[in-house]
Image (cartoon, rainbow, N blue to C red; front, side, top):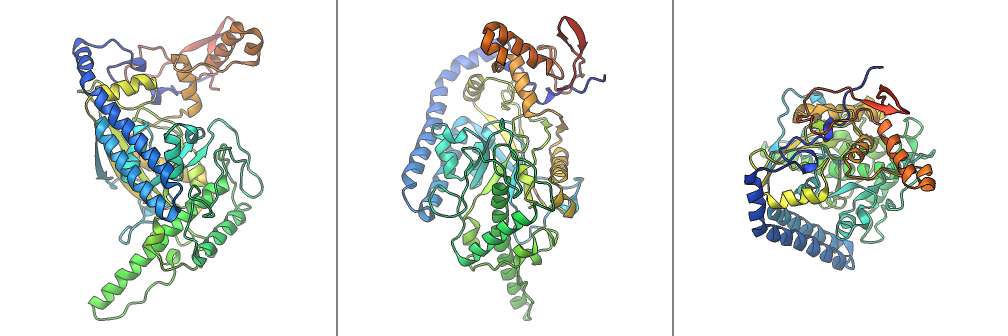
Length: 493
């Protein structure tokens, strides 16, 4: 049997600090770490102040009506995120992503009157990605279940209206396109409290909500609804559709004002488009169903635009070493609405000694290096809005693969077949996490635990040999594992 490529390449650390960040350090680095006691307390105090102040403000403003309290909360969260980046030494630069030589250019949205999309799609390399987003955009996140229960972080994530999904659970979808929601992913789109996602409570918004709900049910029979693990596919689809409609309405109004201004300047008249989605030439005409195209909108325009935050989705569902792209989960693509592509590229810190990615290193060591090393550089590339065509709307898998292809080309990433599950195996092999106990382990204690570890290693596709892998582009290895005393080729689980 042919041994597949190493599934752990996306998680290898390729800096001088070595495997798990525990390699022997040269004298110059040791001296730097000793001197870092001068600034580590300052960095730590700034970070803790930002977390505490943002959390307290969110808790206090939760008692104020959301129409007033939420914009204030978002503003202070953003200011604290900017301060935290400065305190931790992150130097962030923003650039427009070059679009030459990219695939699917015919699907990039024209943005002369602004953009309309449902979510940001970005590669994921470190916890700092989240802070960078919060410092620059008023967004919520699709986060793992349990984040909402973390001290301070949980309060902030609920305030910015994040969605929480369980990566471990297996969900099943029912006939209405929904799944079994996790205990932390109970979403309501009725503005009944400040902690729930809300849209403008106008008759036009109510009509839009009804149209969205009707579309979610009507499309179930026409398309195969993928499972969103631990969450409700219909809830996510509705959230993305609502955000896209708000954008599209504001974009339509901007276009009307531009055409009217041009007509007045030319001393003539101009026929103005009468409906948002059907008049915009960038997305395909079938991007929004007829029920949504004909939905009436109120006159709040830009005011409604900020009523519901965009979601940020890391479709890889875990972090990598910033040189590979993993296969995408399909959750964000089930709604069939445009997505904005962003790419984060981290540079090596300390003259190439340390890379800020957090993939296979203990969080304590990673935080220590981030605090001890004065500065870290990251370049954020704002890419195009990708509008799915008819086929991609019907097939979320194809939609996700094409967006992934654009991101690989734009960020010069390599493709990886790794998944979150293979990363868990790699972490167990490195000793970063403990393998789960099998049923026999529960009965036999330590002996059973050894059997559990053996089973996990036997399920690994490739067993890397620490110390021999110095480059993510190194040669692929065909290691063997032993099972029942016999040597055999490793087989993909």
